[in-house]
Amino acid sequence: MRIQQGVEFLSQTTQEHMLEEHAKRFGIQDGRNLTDLLTDPLFINTFWKKAEDSEKKVIRFFVTSSARGFLRKKDWEKIVQREGRLLSVGLNKLRRLGMILTVRKMWGEVGYMMPKEVRERLTFCLVPEHHFTLSPAETLPYYITAGRGIHLDLFGVLSFLRETEVPLTVKGSIHRRILQKITPLLTLSDEHVEGWASHSIPESKDGERALTVVVDLAIRLGLIRAGGGQLVLENQNVARWLQASQESRWNELFQLVAEEYLPHDSWWDGLLVLMKESKSEEWHKLDDQIQALADAGFRVPDDAAALAVTRWLHLLLGFGWLYLGTTAEGEVYWRWNSLPRLAIEERWFIDPAGIVTIPPLVPLKAVWEISRFCPLVFTGDLIQGELQARSLQSFLTAGGKEEEAIGTLRQYCAHPMPESVEQMIRQWGREARQIQLEPMVRVRTAHPGLLEELKTLEPFRPFLATIISPTDFLIAPQQEKEVTALLRKYGYAPYTPKKAMEDRPVPEQGKEGGPDGLFTIVRPWDGFAVENTFPDQLEGLHQLSELPKMWTRHFQAYHPQTMRTLLQRASELGLEIEAEMQDKNIKAGIPRQVVVEMGYWYVFLETGNKKQRCRLDDINRVRIVLPEYLY
Image 1 (cartoon, rainbow, N blue to C red):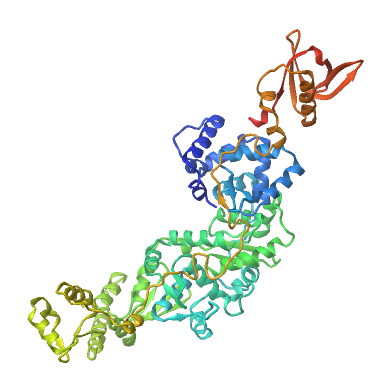
Image 2 (cartoon, one colour; image 1 turned 90 degrees about the vertical axis):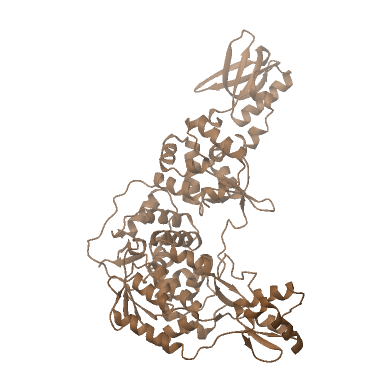
C-alpha cells in the first residue's frame, strides 16, 4: 500500500492531528501535507536518527519480519508478550505520526500496515553500508537468454487481438488452437516463468504459462478484458498505453509486477529495495545483496539465492528488464537492462522494395499504426516489416486510406521515403477498389404508398438515392440515426426487428477478468481497509490505560485503603510514584513492597540502587508517574 492510498481514507481532522504530532516532536510546520512529508527521504532519514528505542524496535519488526509491512493485530500482540510492552508504546507513536496505519476487515479483524514509501526508505536505514562485489566488465554467460521486452510481448498479443477474435473456454482459458498462434509472438517462455508460476499459479499447464502471464498483465493494466466469452481490447486504454513514454510505461509495469508478482515475505521486499537502488549497467553479485539483508536482521532462508533466481530474477529476465550471468565458480550476477527505459528518439528505415527496419526506440504508437497494414517480425532488438498488397488491401477494406498509410510511413522515416514505396501503395489501393463490398441498412415500408409519401417530403430526398423496390430503399449505416429521427419527426414509428438487434454486437457490461487479472494471487492483507483513527498514547497498554486518571494526573489525598491499593498496583506494574510527606518533602521511587509492621503500614520505595521505607500515615498526597517514553 502506498502512502497516498492510505491517507485518502483518513479524515482531514485525523491528518491534522498527525501533522500536529510532527510539529510537536520535530518542529515541522512547513505547510506540507501528510503524504508529502512521509514520502520525503530526507525526513525519513532524519527521523530514524532521532527515533526512540521503542520506535526503532517496532520499525525493525515491520521491515524485517512482515510481508509488505503488514501484521495482524493478533500476531503483533504475541510479539509484544514476548518482547515487552515498550513495543506497544513505539507502535502508538508511529501510528500517531502516520508512519504505520491501522487497517480493519469488515467483520472487525484489525491489522497494521507500514506504507510502501516509508518501508523502503527505512530499509536503507537498516541495511548497513556495503561495498558490493562487482564483476569484470565483460558479459557473463547464462543458460537462459533474456526476453526482448515485456512491452513488445504485450504489443504482440494486443495486435493479434486487434485482428483476430480470441474465444475463451467455459473455464475461462484460451483455446489450444489459438495458443499455438499467439505463443510464437512471445519471447517470454515457460522456462522464464515456471519457478514463479509453480508457486503462484500451480494449476497452469506446461506450454501455456508464459502466455497466461502476458494476458494476466494485460488485464491488470486494463488493456484487455475477458467478456462475452472472449478477450476484448480496451481501445482507449491501449491508446493511452501506446502513447506513454518508455520510462513511464516501464514504471507502471514494474510497479504492477512488484505489487502483484513479488513473493510475500519480508526478505523479498528487502531484495527488491536493494535492486531498485542498484546502478544500471553494472553487474551485481546476488550473494552479497542476500548477505546484506541477513546482516540487517531479515530472516533469510538458507537457499535464498536459489529462490531469488528461480522465482524472481528469471521472471524479470524474461521481461527483458535485466541480464543474468554466472562466473566459473557458479556465482550469480545480475544487471539492469536500461533499454526499456531510454527516451524514444529513433525512426525507422524503408528500402525501395518496401522492407521496413524498426530500431527498438521508435515510438510504440508508431509501430502500432504501421502494424495495421504492414506485417511485423520481431528479430532480436530490431523489428522488421514488409509492405504487402494483401495486408494493405485489408487495411483499406477496413476503412483505411492510402494517404493515411503513406503519411505514417513518411512521418517516422529517418530519411526521405522512396518514391517507389508510395507508388506501390497507390497501385495496391487502386486494385483494392476494383470490387468493393460495403455494408448498407435496408429501410422497408409497409406498402408502396408509404414510400411514395416519403418521396414528396423534401428532407427525405437525400436518403432516397438507392431505391431497390416499390417498398424498400438503402441508406449508409452512418445515416441510420438521422433517418430514424426524421421519420419520428414526421409522425412515423420506425422499429428494428428483434432478430436484427440480436445480430448487433452488444457492449459488455461486466468484466469477467476484472482488475484482478486472469488468475487470483491470494495476499494476507486482502480484505483489509485503512481505518480512520488517531490512537491514544496508551492504546494497547491495557494495564496502564485501565488505571484511574486521578491516580496519574496530579497529587491526591486518599483513604488509607485506597492508598494501599494504589501502591500495590504501581508495584505490580513497576511504575514510579511520587509521595508528598507531611513535612512537604517529595519522595519518589518504585514501590517494591507494601507491608504491615507493628500495626503500621509501610511502603518500600526503590530509586536506582537505593531503597527507603516510608510509613503510609506520613504520606499526605500521592500520584503514579507514567513513564516518560509514553510522551
